[in-house]
Amino acid sequence: AGIASRADELGFKVERFVVGTNGVTLGRLDTILHTRGIQGLILLPAVGFPDLGELSWHRYTAVYADYFIDHPPLHCVCSDHYRSMVALLRELHARGYRRPGLFMEIALDERLQFRWEGAFLALQKYLPDITQIPALQVREVTREQFTAWFKKYNPDVVMGHFPIAMEWMRAAGAKLPKTHGFVCLNSLRTEGDCASVDLRSGLLGARAAELVIGQLLHNEFGVPEQPSLTTIPAKLIDGPTLRPAPAGRSDK
Image (cartoon, rainbow, N blue to C red; front, side):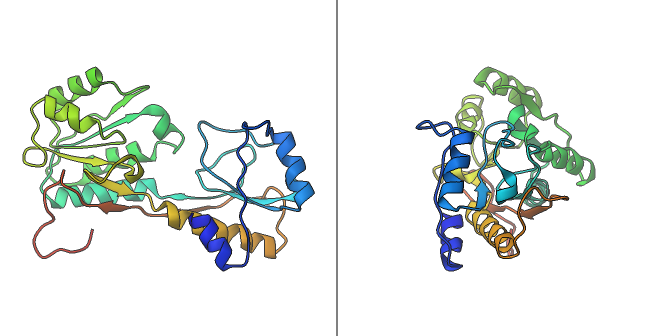
């Protein structure tokens, strides 16, 4: 939606293609784009590390709405996950949490070059009075693994991508937000029933549209010699699973 809205404001139309459905292979997509005279591409996040090298890149200019992908290496627009984790941990610290815990499926962080965990580990060392709790990093998060980790380390606030963890925490004796807190690391995975991180997908889409349209207007086609990374920080959406912010504060 962010892509389409900003492109429309700038006088461009957007059409969406999904590779792998209705017989749309990369080769077929290349033909469609060339036939229709479509030269500007925004590549949405995909599972894993896709290889798009088959497209005739000398005809296109593009950006990834994702972190760096090497096939081919292109300019990228994405959420600033590292900065966002730093800001989140500082906010939680200001609210009195001293035992933050992070759980995550490895694949979710691996494609971000481990920015979530990297920021978490760094802030554990530098925030005062913090108890360092090992992150739960697994191939697939299960109730059994989470519950064992939660009971062993007793984090007073938990961060992760799966809201079902709130149910597991309550089954282990947690009372949200009285005794423990929870923050979902992607607001799109929630129904507004918990605090969460808004990755600003609309802003990311708008910025991606601006960049690729700018490249079109400057006739910058092909794979760039030096890909660049544009990031936008996320923001915390407050919710019933966190203690209130300290009195007198309105910023987060």
